[in-house]
Amino acid sequence: MKKQSKQKSTRVRVGKAEISHPPQIQEYAVRHGTRLRFVAGSALEQQITYQNLLDTMLMATTTTQLADVFTSVKVRKVEVWAAPLLGSAVSVSVAFDSAVAGNLGDQRLHTDTSMGIQPAHVSARPSPKAQAAQFQPSSVSNAFFLTCPSGSVIDVELTFVQSSVTGAMIAQNVGVALTVGAPYWRGLDGLAAATSKLLPVALSVA
Image 1 (cartoon, one colour):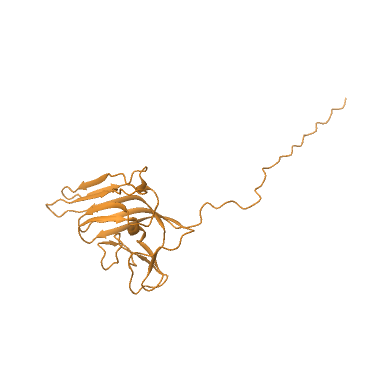
Image 2 (cartoon, one colour; image 1 turned 45 degrees about the vertical axis):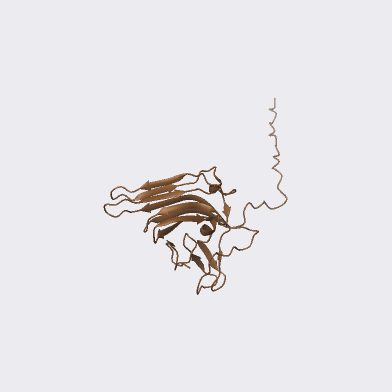
């Protein structure tokens, strides 16, 4: 008897239907996470606003006018160090104490005092559920309140984002002899380098 040949069945796989147009774009503008460092030129009890934070990174549009590179900012962390003089003690503090609707802080005070030769050190984050931990546009509302002695080092961890819709935000203070199109950095207090009490550790200051 002849053996019947086994025929292999052919299965046709039908692929998933292709989308008839390009995929959507989730974000077009630049998003930038960074850590900026500043040094206190004098003792401070200073309110730092969202306008101050956005004015730290600037672009010259004329020889005197500066525009913010970004339109919104989120505070991830504020860290402060202060070294004491021999035989003395210093204190530093950070408070996310805004009481303005839309950027309410958690009202917590983060503070530390030096001991011996150990510097005072605070590492403070806004509560994730507080509005102070969300993206905020430029405004004079308080992002956080900073207290520190002269010589303190202040680091701020921020996430900046541009808007694809709104226009450029002009910095609160003008500059002098700027190079059009060049990037500049400003003090954490939003003031020009000549008057700022919280100077940035950067090459091109305005």
